[in-house]
View 1 (spheres, rainbow, N blue to C red):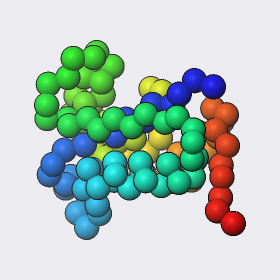
View 2 (view 1 turned 135 degrees about the horizontal axis):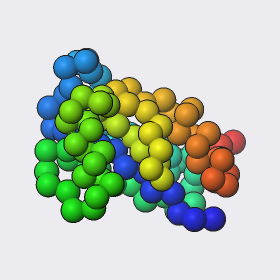
View 3 (view 1 turned 45 degrees about the vertical axis):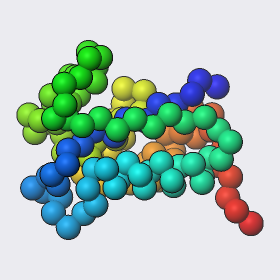
View 4 (view 1 turned 30 degrees about the vertical axis):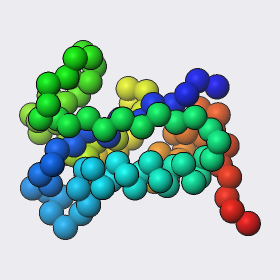
Length: 109
């Protein structure tokens, strides 16, 4: 199984449509904790991208520019180049995408 790489694109300032929701950084931290609990001992790489900082990698730069140009709301969650959620991402959608990649959910008993 290839390691999943989840990118969370965001900015320090909360987007105008997302007032009252967690910040992008808080969403990143929440996703990392939730997914690490749901899929323990399974490799997932988490990367936070500040859309206001210069980006080297072309795909990352392109996605950051799309968020800045209001093509997507932030925080924007991307797995292997596929958008899984924006603004207020749903855990269920992200769980399903990881399970489709072969990740096995482990619930505490």
